[in-house]
Length: 356
Ligand code: GCU
Image (cartoon, rainbow, N blue to C red; front, side, top):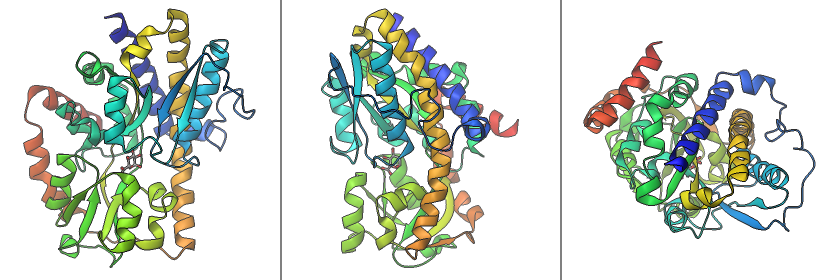
């Protein structure tokens, strides 16, 4: 029980930081590079002699603000615990796809990871509400919902007993749009017959099919070669993945369907967290909000830089999209997914935030 309460407290603090960053406060006041929000950020600390090193799995590059923030978290943890704990971040899917790694996290062979929201649906389907298309009106509204512990507390601690997984924080992970190797997408009919990669969850498959495409769920690391060989026509993601994972080399038409704004979560194995001495665990949890703030602030800038870099490579960005038509097509999916009281409460909280 103690474990649950502590995680919940960390989540509250973390989402409050997310709220700040998404509202512009954190981003505006933070130094430009992610990770610089913490005092010791600029000097790298050698943590290799820490007594315990948590492995943290990440499926993107070491340029990503989430990587930089996690590395900083590891160094700060090392200092805060006098070298008893540190974190080593493994980027580029080195430890496996998110859906494989989360199993390892559950059994304790990997201690920490970032995970896209849809992958958690296989453990608790109620996570689906935050992964539905067009539900959040803006990053600010998304942050407002995550900041309300009365809304998210139960969901975020729901995997502790069943899967041994604690959700430490929810992070802003951009707005997702469709891109492909063939043409700009304006109307849903433009997606007709196009094979589009989605994240590995039923909700994502149903969503892209409702939008008019053929769904192909797979781990992120396989997408580049599938685009290159033509096994895939396209994918859907934010600008950072489009450029950093070089999808812009092989699928040059990026269209602002703006269909998703889904969080990434920072997870830890619950027993690992519970096994830390109280003072070390508290020090660790206190570091989470600045980690989130740093990652979120860095994300906004990284997305803009990614778009500019992709344009340099010859990718085109189309903002002339009939978003209303896509919204209409996915509305039944949203309605049928909000089908129990837990999800209804989450959905109502989103609507209330949107209306406020
Ligand atoms: C984003 C998100 C990741 C997710 C990825 C994907 O990059 O931040 O968590 O895994 O998209 O589409 O697989």
